[in-house]
Length: 326
Picture 1 (cartoon, rainbow, N blue to C red):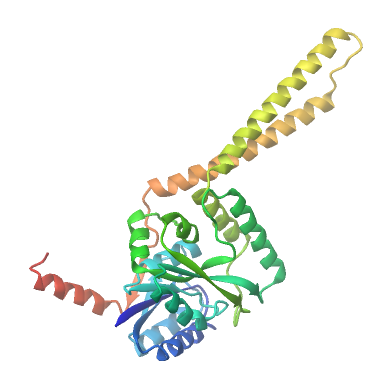
Picture 2: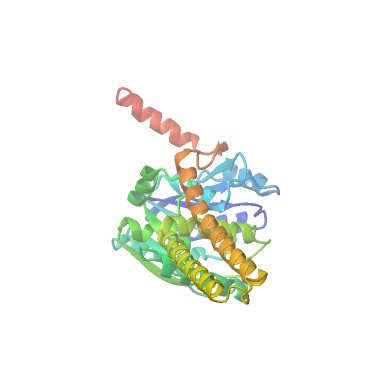
């Protein structure tokens, strides 16, 4: 019998954790051919989310909980959570029920057909239409800049085979861009279309800074084109500046007493070149930051506590003892 890991990241989701737990449980009651575990990773919630998770874990041993020592950001926390799955496949699903648990059977069906990665693709969304259009613009930009194929309207909601999970673990990236890895790693993948629902309770913890940080993570992980673009911009502005300098020099030599250099052209040139330099430095800085994150070898997440993982640890210990400690 195949074992499936469901991973749900959460932060201040006291109004949703019970609902997502019940919704997932209901789906697996219809799938007796599978056993499952439901892993919740809490990113240092400040409401009653942790209390509710403890209650769920006490009542159902299928529920496993990881409490982070602090808020490590949604990408790092969610990525770490999916790597803790012990099943033959891991299904990532958010806590707010915008991504419907009813898609679980469809993901498993595609997986049984041989696909190593099965992702949900939003064709419609009941969220704020402005945010949906902004995300579409982001996907379009990423598709044009990415050196590998970039999946559109895909958030990471879906199924990952244990082989894919092991490869991501081996990469040891403290801040991975999971959705970008799907096409880069070369595993057989497919998309399943769905309509994103409205948030059932509470408000999203995502803000502009988090969206921007995630966008920069994707950009620096998927492409080196921005570096080439700023190099070309630097070359072009240098040529233009040099030509303008030659033109001004010729005019000054020909009309020595009549031609005044003027402050306006000088200020415009200074501000233009300065702004281009700042933009180039910013792009380069993002890549340097991504490199720094990798080379410092900081942990993806530091755990404060685990619940219901003890049985798994004891089982591993028994296996080790039976093999003579090897």
